[in-house]
Image (tube, rainbow, N blue to C red; front, top):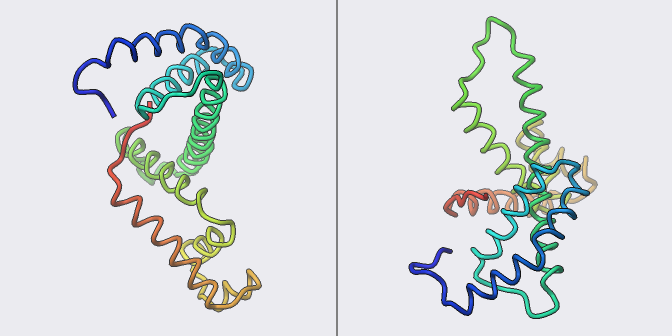
Length: 179
């Protein structure tokens, strides 16, 4: 959330101190994780933007822990997006010349959708995720899924309900672009 007016002076000073004290350390930490100074700089910026957007700030002595927790979440998001991008590019490369490849805008929309779906599925339990994928991608029936997962049909119904609720909830939540 953004402030409707500039943050109070004391908060600005706290943010400045937090940034001054930990920015360089966080960038180096992210660079070791990513191996790329440009990605590290981007994620360092995104980490502070996420912290400021949350309007919650670390208690004294816990700044690095908070920053690392936020940065790890952003790393997971980045890696997920890159996995999806790679898979999507491979799928596009398979298209024959007779098939028209989608335009740049369509590709970006499809990629954003795939990243969102992947994030939703990653938050499900492994069995709920597997049941959902077996149902939607492999077109298996609930009894077939139950046999494959070695669970009851009632469990499959519960997994599917959980997955569908998660998808529905994601549709109802306004999309907030991450930096």
